[in-house]
Amino acid sequence: MKLKNKITAVLISMMCFACQASAYDIAVFVDGTRVNFDTAPVIINNRTMVPMRAIFESLGAQVEWDQQSETVFGTLGDTNISITIGSSEMVKNGEPVTLDSPPVIIDDRTLVPVRAISESFGCTVNWDEATQTVHIISNTSEYFIPELIPEYSGSAYVTVNGNEPYFDEMSNVSFENYSELDYLGRCGPAYACLSIDTMPTEERGNIGMIKPSGWVTAKYDFVDGKYLYNRCHLIGFQLSAENANEKNLITGTRYMNTEGMLQFENMTADYIEDTGNHVMYRVTPDFRDSELVARGVLMEAESVEDGGIGLSYNVYCYNVQPGIVINYADGSSYAYDKQTDNNIERTYILNVRSKKFHYPDCSGVSNMSEKNKQEYTGSREELIEMGYSPCGICSP
Ligand SMILES: [Zn+2]
Image: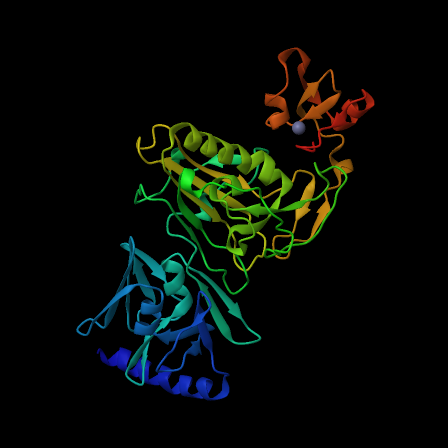
């Protein structure tokens, strides 16, 4: 150890003795299971520092320690990180990442910043100040990067990764796998190899007793079916025969259900029924930070026996409802005040027969017969004066 580092380590160690003595015990949970440490976590520079080996292993990462360079090497999936005692630079897949609090040695144990390490491996980290608890959610998958999803801009879904699913393995044996609920009661990815075997043979039963995370009953007159939220199956009942499985139900908007997910579920069910083939299938809810309502779902499917020729997609469906502003933290909502938008000019599609007006990418437009369809550029107010009313699906 270099002398400077040694002094730093000793100083930090003394400082930490003080904070350790005054602080509560800091608990760390990975997917709801408490991690046992032989040295208590401490807070340095507002960062929780935890023993290296225990945290890496709890996250499922391989860990190696190089005594000579005092460097920790961790590997999980495609991610490699290295961090060095006393250095505020971590290296992730060859790229430097700045640490607020470098690794230290306390009582012969190497302590590392838990958030930086966990986030490097794609986990979500939540700090609960009141109980001095760190919650790490590891089921934020490595394949799905929420930051790459564009903001909702009028289309119920977007394709992701060039419409190529992220599966690394194909199976021709049916299975269904549902993630355990996390400490906030939220679903994780639902992953399956679907076939005729997994499809229902009985009618769908009642699911009203399940209260998914963020569940609130909210009614709006302009929403199709009135209710803003539906209990939304990650893997649809028609594919999985999973009825009231709480690990497969999230709080989803009517719009996400009917305009986003349903067409992909129908396409998948039709393919299986027509061919008798298997389909790799995964639906990943996009929960951000500690929000209780998902921002959307990633849906991936790939047919097995024909190598994806018959069926292959990778789409993100937005958990939004046109005309409504949703607070994803708790599921509360309110109707967006259209009056402020009344005079803004934009392009609408009119149905000259039904006298409804739509946003151009509404599914109602694609179903409209050409002779009733008319493009119009102008304001809402003008349309309403002309006797048109807003569509109930796209709520323009
Ligand atoms: Zn519409």
